[in-house]
Image (cartoon, rainbow, N blue to C red; front, top):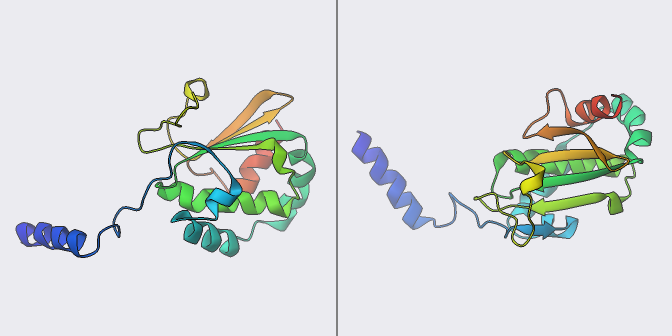
Amino acid sequence: MKSFLMLSVFILGIAFPGSSQEADAPGGPCSLDDLHAGDFAAYMDTNYTSYLPDSSTISRLCEKLRETEITVVLGTWCSDTRTQVPRFIRILDDCGYVYEGLTLICVDRKRTAGDIDISSLNIERVPTFIVYFEAREVGRIIETPDQTLEEDLLRILLQ
């Protein structure tokens, strides 16, 4: 039975190449436009649209977000990135965030970011959302939030 399952998976992989593993975005800086293009676009559009942030948390969060800079390190191949990054962008949009304060860095499966040295960011898992206030890191959300993204962001900014 085990041999049959392995053979079936192998045959499906040949019959439907790319269905089990989509192309990686190359490591390096990326933009919101990049997230709305290529293989990642379907995840971006679906998870952005379906996510409904808590309105009372959003109303408390928006003013605090205006004073922050945020770096997001993501891998378009990562299931947590595919879920959490679109939701995060939805929160920023709902708050009218000024995107000049947002830095997006794509990493490949080896967690390298092309010509960008991210070793000082100590990235172990993606996505990692790093929040800065007055050029000082004040908190991170790594992979998935403890509560929700908006609640975790508010908790970080109220510290």
